[in-house]
Image: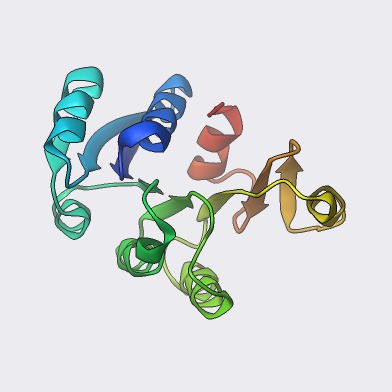
Amino acid sequence: MTLRVGIVGGSFAGTLHAEGWNKTGRAQVVAVASPSQSTQKNFQSQFGCTTYSNASEMIEKEELDVLSLTLPNKFHHELSLLAMSKGIHVVCEKPLAMNLEQGAEMVSAAKKSGSSDSFSSIRLNQCRSTSAMCRNNPRIERFDGSTAWLRACSSDSPVALATSTARY
């Protein structure tokens, strides 16, 4: 099964996500949403994907399996909820949400929706307590010193299998 991936954002992080997904051999970037025409043009050229200036339109029109959110976190909550309401898995860059309440709502939505296999990657700011916190947290699958991979899915889900081989 090849996962159909949509990227929201573009720029540096979006390009890293797109390259990472494509390197898995289990996913293909099929669409990108960015207000920047330059980013749209670059993604279309580099990845051969459909482009949108509006993320909600991309989520509505494309048949996505996964949505990578690589834009500012003030947009994560709304777009995650929309995607998960359609059964789309969500991979989210740091920070997950604007506040704890939004983050909790996003996790709750993932558990209730058809995307209960959602898998989030959160880049954490380096600090003395981060390493100890991550090593002692049973919800964190893997920690490499700067990225914590949080599991909200079974290890054999398609998203977990694809992301486990991706190197961003």
